[in-house]
Amino acid sequence: MASGKLDRIALLVDDLDAAMAQMEAIFDMSFVLLHVDKMGIRVAIGESGLELVEKTSTTSIPVEQVWRRPIASLEVRVDDVDAAIAAMREAGYEVHHSLVTPGGVPKVQMGSAFHDLPTLLYAVPPGVSYVEAVSGRSGDISEVANYAPDIDWEGRR
Image (cartoon, rainbow, N blue to C red; front, side):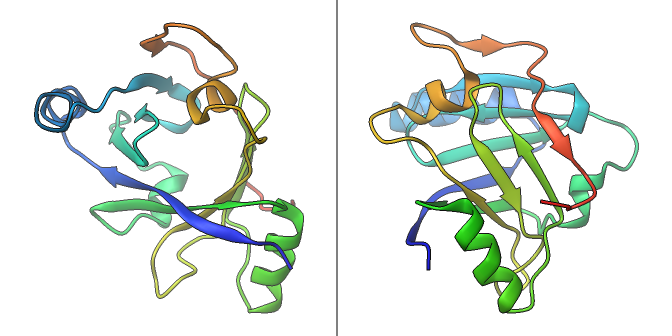
């Protein structure tokens, strides 16, 4: 059995720049902006536990199949991704897609698994910040253009 905790929530927004500015002004949250052209989205990530997601494609994109506006995903941090996937499959859920971030973090979208809510599983090594682990970069970064995770849309993981 994998142990896990709800660690992040990703919200869909229509204007990512405005949403980031509001969260920074009101709650002093800082974000790194990722341009994920392969997925047709831009994502603002940080250490606050909140992610903001904006669709950039004018056509339908595969990840939209699991979104439940305003929630793009409930993100559960697990200590063992493979054990968590096995437990989810045993409970009747299937992988929608999986990816490995440029920082080497495995992320697995289990579709709308938990009470019809999009559920994503991921693991970050201990002692590494979420932003560094996901982006593969350290130091003072504010934007990662051409962020290109390795995506498996077939759910074979």
